Length: 91
Image 1 (cartoon, rainbow, N blue to C red):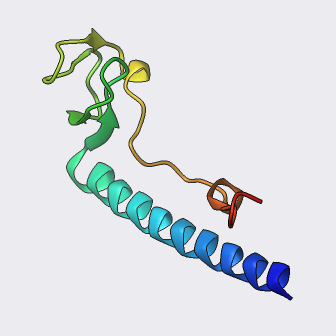
Image 2 (image 1 turned 90 degrees about the horizontal axis):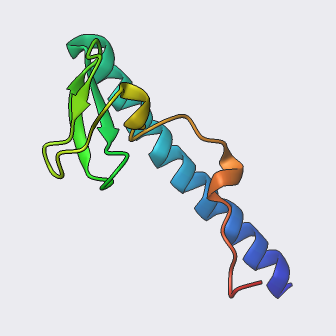
């Protein structure tokens, strides 16, 4: 019975985290579509930053790293439910 409850709790937590992530992803897509601004992380220091979607070169305002858009991963991207599965009590 305890394992069944832990499984249900784990599944509930994963679904809630996935739902929250997908809401953030959807909102970030609105910014991209309406403002032509992308929300990314620096490929060097990991800081969050914004850049124009049509930029060919990007420079991080936090560390000065410069590179192409592929060097700056999107902060939010669509993820599967499995990415949010949790373990209860390290099991």
